[in-house]
Length: 216
Image (cartoon, rainbow, N blue to C red; front, side, top):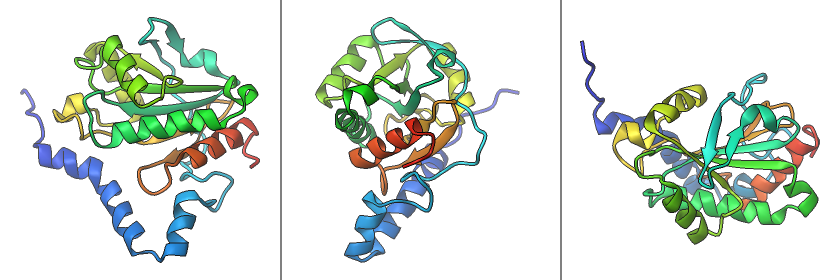
């Protein structure tokens, strides 16, 4: 039996509820506390939330908007940043791309060479190489490597990351949109969200901490 697509309201609730909760909590905190949430340290060495230990970056091979083949298996030894973007998105995606672009500029050249920043398309029909290039240029985020592909190629990658894509919700602004940091061994060590902790300073801090093996 053919399954119907879930109503858009269900997708919206699943994707946006964590963001809305974060906004409410953020708005209720006093000024001093809210600053600590945005740019301060968490209970561990990372400023983003820390996932359970032992989760590795999925193995996949995809081409970026330049046509270069990117294999995650070949990125071991580097800190890997992964986020999920839609070039039609007008809410979270421009802010995420700008924050990551600014974070990469905060890194020293020696650090930047040890980081692999990846953006995965969540809307393959719209995220063409030309649109990806224009989107990154507008957000001053050309240091972010935008990976594109067909719907058939992208689906198993979305499943591997356990994300909801815009192609599945039918809305460019409704999809998973976190930033994930993986250490040199490929282990997922930090997750940053809009809000409260996705800032250029926090992204740069967590990338440096991942390069240092969890020592901030």
